[in-house]
Length: 383
Image 1 (cartoon, rainbow, N blue to C red):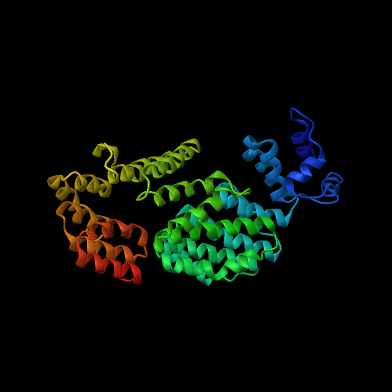
Image 2 (cartoon, rainbow, N blue to C red):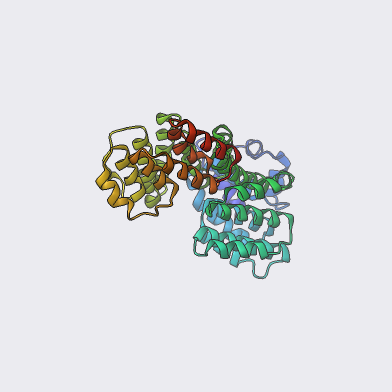
């Protein structure tokens, strides 16, 4: 089946494609391709991905589906493991579930991978409470280096979801060197990208280092193995990183993220980008917007605060969490209240979010005494 697929891909082009050309594309010797065609070896998932993206990028879903069926049928254990990671990063949860279930009679190593990727499936489906999932990950007993590292990556992602940015980065830093030493190139690059994702968020929010955050985000975007469903959200991070610095760059990246989401059919998330991120940037930079462009109460508070609409602000403020750092910041704006801004800084720092602590800190720059207090909190990263 896979040999026929290879022939169909190479022969169905507008020009002759040689085996040597394919070998060069996927970084192997000509002999590796010859041995594959003569049933002496198999091509790894990473090789198939590079071939498909070179010859038929628009058919990736259908072609990977064929390869996955053949992989499961022939019990190619290595490619089953690689496909679990592929399906997870691609957010193809149906394929991931199918691969996990196919390993019930597999050797111990593959069962171990199925166990930890089942936890990943729970994380991605969002049908398990964060504390419960964290407990499952902490009690999980990995059998291989790769599954141990992956469980740590998942722990870090759960911590991000819980807004615990400091431990999130600490967990990732603890395994960085080990990830670099993973032997399989596909798993090494994919896990490295997962680390980059964590570091991009960590450097942006916890350390307020936008240059390093953008460095890690661009590493993900430029990955040769990852698919747009994994890389696309880095445009959101880039848009956020520019929100105080450049309106044009911020909106450009938010819009790119929005366009990708629409193309992927993820309309609900795309609408959130428009109503939250793009609306926030427009209000922050004083662009002409209308409150009807968002249904989010906090974003409406931002709009009312910037436009001095006290009556509307008070009505909405009564219906939000008044300890939310954004709500406190908007309260400080509408009332020109440095104490509210100081509380907002404290709340942001307490959650480990130095980046958005810049919102109230910039306002406190107008008040020398309060500005000193805000600077001390940001420097010490304590509330």
